Length: 262
Image (cartoon, rainbow, N blue to C red; front, side):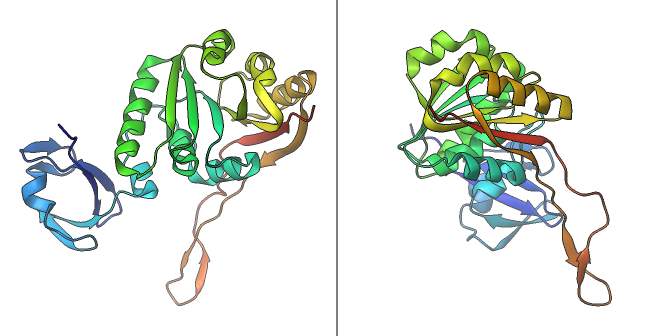
């Protein structure tokens, strides 16, 4: 039996709910008890629907809605950094990409969207409490996209999973690491990179960035960029015009990109 379609309901405050359009009463935290098929199946995209005392806009479940409505356990890599990593590593259709760790799959979802059906995404995660959430988010994404890459998941630390990775692929087009410690991982998997392929490290603190830099050089890779991506939101001013909104600059982590050239 085919799985029911999924859709997005957006509350007036911007909160997004990803809903399975099943023909039965369900309880969704933040919405309440309702029958999704009877309530929203005939509501066109862009139209409003009232459920209980709340008003929602019915929208197609595109990547931004799926990211906002995803289940979360681990801290996720957002679009600000994911977009830069995908662009700088040159990831696209037909690529084989190795990612550790999976976490809640925020970065994996961005990767899957650009890789398409011809790609192969290999994820590695040692913590089942995180991977259970991340894999569920990827399954939801797969149902929303017309194209989804082949996906292989490996449970364990990446440095102790090299044999399992090599049983799946001989070489990769990109490696993305989001780990508490990068040195052992870099030295374990750098040889899997194709000539010209790149590795990225997502480092919450500067000492991790320095350690990753050293490990890349010791593994024969050339560091081509390291730094941070700063984001500042703007909004409409009360007396007209636009200005930066109050709040800090959007620093999330330090990023490092290194390439295998020979």
